[in-house]
Image 1 (tube, rainbow, N blue to C red):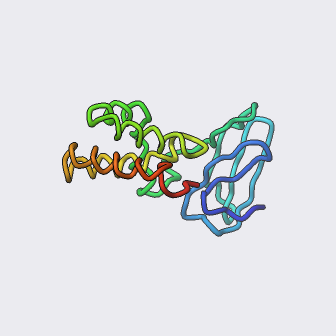
Image 2 (image 1 turned 135 degrees about the vertical axis):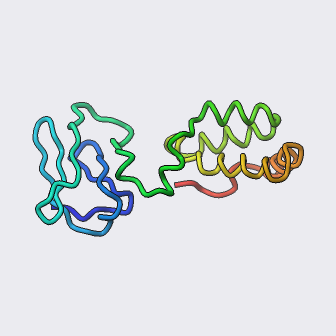
Length: 147
C-alpha cells in the first residue's frame, strides 16, 4: 500500500509508473510481479503497466492518467522548440537552450519554451529577441530554478 504522491507516480523500488491523477493523496494497493505493476483503489484495478526490467531515467506515464493541463504538453518536443527559436534569433535560441538544459530532463523546460512561443505570437519576434537579449545580459538564464 502507498499514498499516491503529487506527481501521481508510484514506484516498484526501481522505476516509476503513473496512476490516475485524481488519486493524488489517496492510499492505493500496489501489486508487483516479475512482469506487471498493478494499482488497486478500493479493490478496483485503476492502473496496470508492464514492469520495466531495467532501470529507466524517465517514468512510464500513460496519457489517460494525466490531468488535461499536463496533456497539452505531450505534442511538444525539444527539436521543435529549437527550430522555432532559430527562426526568431540567436538570443531566443540561447534562452530556449537554457530552458531545455536547466532541468533534469528537457521536458521540464517545455512549459517555459511554450510561454516564449506565446510571447512571440503576442509581441512579435523582434520584441521577443530583444527581451531575451536583455534577460541574458543579467547573467544566467532562466532567472529562477526549475524543479
